[in-house]
Image (cartoon, rainbow, N blue to C red; front, top):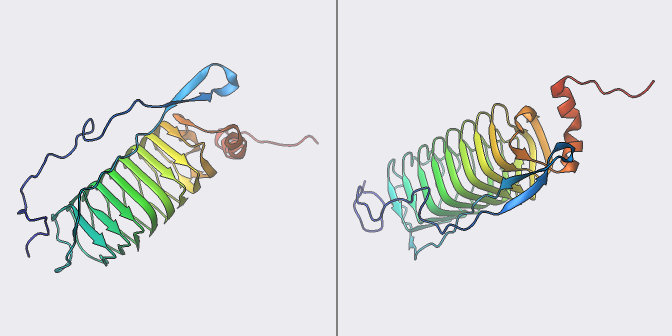
Length: 262
């Protein structure tokens, strides 16, 4: 079956993929002050860089048999497309828009999503393990059990919607923003998070076990509910209120018993 492209054969290169240091307009990084323990001095957390998408005119996607492994999809508009159970492992999506698509049990393992916007997608068991998401917006998604373990996310905005049981074990997140969304039992075990922000975001029963956090801003997470990994919060910034909420968990981690006076 021929690849679905915008008129070019598979293997053609229309333009080089964007490097980490290119393809977007770089702006000075904002720095936010955060008090340190005991009020001694100040520390800063570097703000995440958000994707700046400018999609070109898109061609409607024609479903002539479904996705193809290692397929090449360029400047296509997937609108209300049912991708349930389809195999797009290793595929490349560049300058695409996916709107209202069903992704139940879709296999996108090791796929590359570049300069792409996903709006209102839904599905259970979507496999994006070891995928690359760069300059991607995921808006108002309703997902459950999404597999992103071992994936690389760079300049990604996840805004609105609800994601249950998100698996990000051993993933690498850099310049990622979770905004106005609900994350239920997300698993960041062994992941590396650098310049990651949670803005007006509910974080419920999050697993940070063995994770590495660098410039992670958790102050906008309400609630901030950790099931594991409170000892991994070095490199993150939290609010005074969150510190009080986490006090019982921190005490348990340190082996401190808190008893009232008899």
